[in-house]
Picture (cartoon, rainbow, N blue to C red):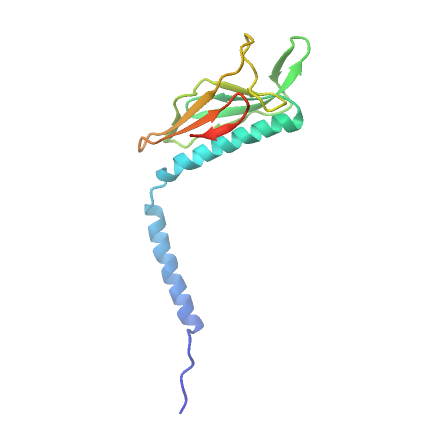
Length: 159
């Protein structure tokens, strides 16, 4: 008496994979992507701040981040010996990071964060020490907020 071979045939396996793929293609577009925008935007902002600070210390120059309501600009600076100030370096393009359409920056808009070559926040123009900078990213679709702090020591922390 012959027994039938145990297991799945290749054809059965392909049919199962095709069915799972079709169900996945139907389910993925219905997920709410706006839920993912705020956490990923906050992580990207933190990573860019850390990268900017690392570039300042690693390259021995200043970097500035200018924050607006829906984007932030990162630019490399060069020292102008005539005016004794750090100014945008024309050899390097300014990087503009745009936020997703439902994410905005509330607190922190208008701030200019400048990291010096030691990774610290540069003191204010009037000579006063740099203060703690708080940046709030708002998700307008669900009202959630992520708060990120940049300390005068250059450390970046999500609250």
